[in-house]
Image 1 (spheres, rainbow over the protein chains, first blue to last red):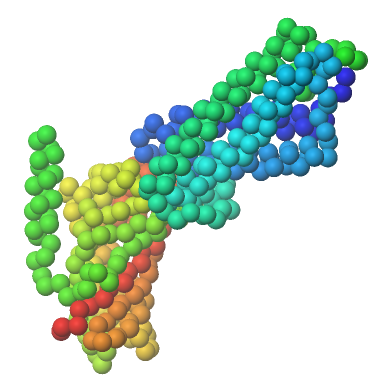
Image 2 (image 1 turned 60 degrees about the vertical axis):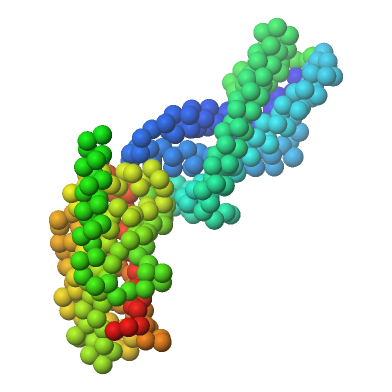
Length: 182
Length: 185
């Protein structure tokens, strides 16, 4: 069975780890009292967000030139559609969430300076009310993504453990597919 | 409760004590702002309340004098969270030092509409000499003085302790001012 390309596999897992890390960081940091550590963590969170955004763009470009392997023939059509919808949602969310964070940062009066070196232009001026709305949008989008990721992981495990097909293993690095065909 | 009451009293006394001398600036047009750098991100801030007394004669620039007192409690650092933070002991310690003061010691002409002002800036009980260029514009009997100077916050122990880490909050803060005097002399 066809696997994803090495680049696609690498991007998937690197982005997944970054999302997991910065999601946890986001949950942790906003409760902290103001301190140098808090300022650092906010910056790291933003830098990781910018990196995720750039990697997702690259991943989409890569995907255009390297089509993902087809679903196993045994998979019902509705599941294939559900999987496609979930993947589309994940791509959109991994782009929309960094953008909402970037806009929220601008509206709060804090420009994003990537890695402390590269200033990313502010699309919005400082606006407290708008900053609050964007914060809520950023949180809401994250809750939605959390739900989609849970489904995504559950589906992958179901394929691997119950259907015993190659859907998960073709995205795993260093693992040989279970079978040549199917 | 008690300490909050004390703070209120201190603030009231400070507010009362501020206009001890005649102020001759147009507050609607004058502004004292600053740019701090947090994780290399420039953040705009300003002081909402200050009073100043400026004496300036374009024919005798060397005789010019300026005295500016800034109410530190009127600071807007750019976020509510930071405004609460900078009132604390390790920053401005506003309860003990409610204001910052600049008093000029000498003024030199640097050519038309340009001055070099030297004076002492006192913040948190620490006084340091500063020298910076000022541009002057005169229109309709009003003088507008504008300038920028770098303030090294750690020289005044602004943000000491954990906050003295300059990788997080840079030592240098750019202070920008525009002082417009009222036309009556």
